[in-house]
Amino acid sequence: SDLPAGTETLVLIVDDPDAPDPQAPQMTWVHWVLVNLPAATTRLPEGITALPAGTISGLNDWKQKGYRGPCPPIGRHRYFHKLYALDTTLPEMSRPTKAEVEAAIQGHVLAQVHLMGTYQKSGR
Image 1 (tube, rainbow, N blue to C red):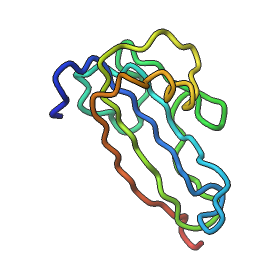
Image 2: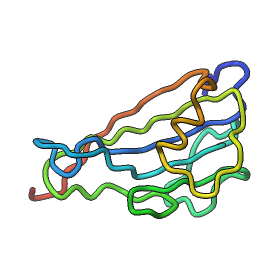
Image 3: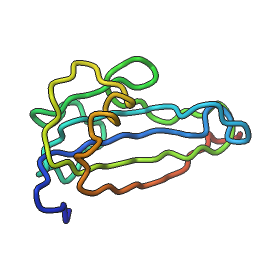
Image 4: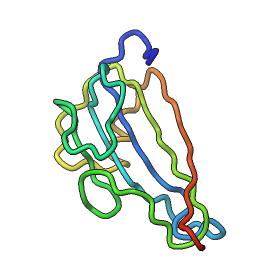
């Protein structure tokens, strides 16, 4: 809600900067990349199976499209949900990576918000 005037689309990136071990992180693991979400999108339902029209699903670090949830091998990991309001619709990308999307949004971000949650498997 409360998107800036001129917002055309949204980008969502969900990643984990604590992979594989929060005590010795080696990489940021990408769980989800969504591009060109319509500005009118106010929620994505749990268990989503169909994306809003025009939305592009990018590649996660499993080299697949779509969302893959947390499954940390060790410790409590942080999961960042980064939502960007853009002043444009990005050009067609068939399987964009996080890096490609981050490059494409440069100069088009009107606002951004980050939500961080943590997760740890039971018994670890």
